[in-house]
Image 1 (cartoon, rainbow, N blue to C red):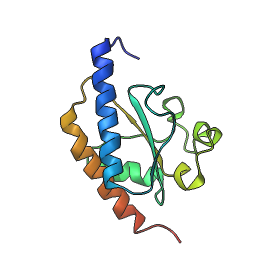
Image 2: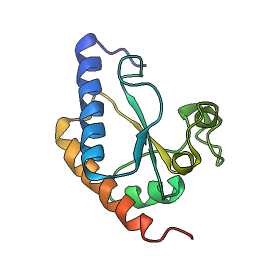
Image 3: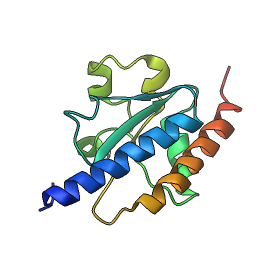
Length: 132
């Protein structure tokens, strides 16, 4: 992590948790992958969405200026399902629809609701086109 002070860490954690709450309020079938807030990294949120493919969601969000990644930061060049999420026994329905959101000191609370709305819109739209 960068050279953040305690106030930076607390503020970024608050933004991350606010986004998680806002997404959960708008989207069914969402799962936090990883520990609850107590032991989680303050700047990383990994969410799994049933009924969507992570790569497709990533591109849809990119069109709305919400930048996310698939997999872990150390495996961002790999295109397969995250071995970390697989080792955590994330259910298949969420495993293939998992994205990573990273937060920094320049993120603000003003970005939370628009990001959550964009995520909800994209997930809802993509679920309509789910392969059967």
